[in-house]
Image: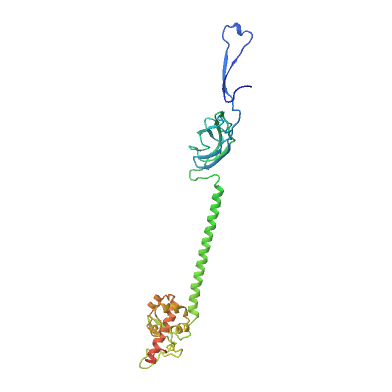
Length: 306
C-alpha cells in the first residue's frame, strides 16, 4: 500500500534466526525488482485480422481510451505478439512487433498455420493489459484469402454467374429470333409465288422447263405466255405490288429506277446493289423481268402502258 503507480521498486529479503548474530558474518539477502502497474488499466479493443496471406497477417485494433486532460495518459507504442496456436505464447516461438500505429503487418510466418495474436498498449504510465487472443490461419502458397471480404467474394461470384447466364440467355434469344426470321423469309420465298407467271432463269437467260412449251416457228427460243400480261404495268410500284415485292419500292425509287423501261434492263448484280440480298427475292424479281423481256419480244415495239 502507498506505492507509486508505474514505479520500479527493489526489495531485499533477509533470512534471520536466533544464532545469526553469532556467526560474525553479514546477513544473507536476496534482491527482488518489481514495477507497479498503472493506476488505470489500458486495454485495446476490437482487435481484428484485416487480411491473411500465405506468410503474413495484417492486423488492426482500436486504441484504448485516454484522458486528454492528463498529459501522462498518452500512448507511446503498441506491442503485438503473434504465436503458433499449439505453442501458446512461448517466447521462443512468438513473434513480437512494436509499432506506434494501431495497425501492423506481420511477415515471415509459416504457411497454413494457425496463429494467436495479442496486443497491448504502452502508456506513459506503463504497459496496459494484453488483449484477448484472436486466431487466424495463414493461407497456402498458391492462394490468398481476405478475412472480412470472404462473403463479398462469394457475392461477387454469384453475381458474375448470374450476369453470365443473362448474357448467354440474351444471345440465345437473339440467335433464335434471327434463325426464325431467316426461316420465315425462306418459307415466304417458297410459299408465296408471284401473281404473274414466272420463268426460271439460269445465268441471266430465260429457261423453259419441260412443263413450259416453247413457241415454235421462226423464233423457237421465245416462250409463249398464256398468263398475266407483264407489260401492262404503268409504274414500278404497280409491278412490285403485283409480284408481292412492294417492300422494295423505296429502294427502287432511291436508286432512280422509276419507270418500267429501266426495270427491263435490271440485272442480278444491280438488285444486290439495291439491297435485295435474299436469293429467293432476287429470283422472283428476275423471273418477272425475264417475262417482261420475252413478252416485249413477242408483242413488238408497243412497250409499256403509259
